[in-house]
Length: 114
Image (cartoon, rainbow, N blue to C red; front, side, top):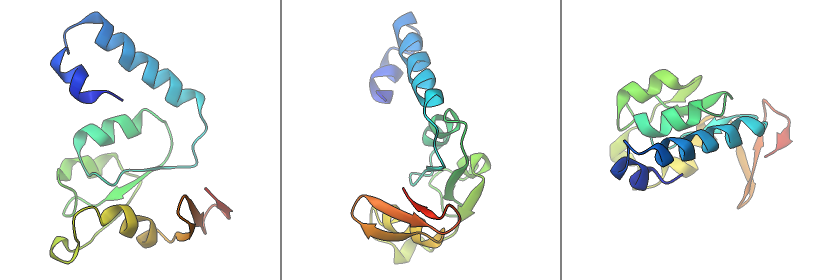
């Protein structure tokens, strides 16, 4: 995803073709869920393209609260207690996932490692 580049050339046809190719690539994959740890409208829009359940921050915890409207399941956290980037670690835990290894999570509601 080249959002910064696309934003600079938003009115060019090639930009829209690239976004269309991204959407097609996302639709060709079968995702169990999408985890949005940014809490931005932009990230929620791209997560929606995958046509899978989206998990993210609630409207009070997300940087842009309206992004929470796109989520199927959300969590809350106190921002003052979280260092920068900690949502990447905390969000899966609050959704009931456990880290097995650095790249894998165990999701109790899926009964498999992802």
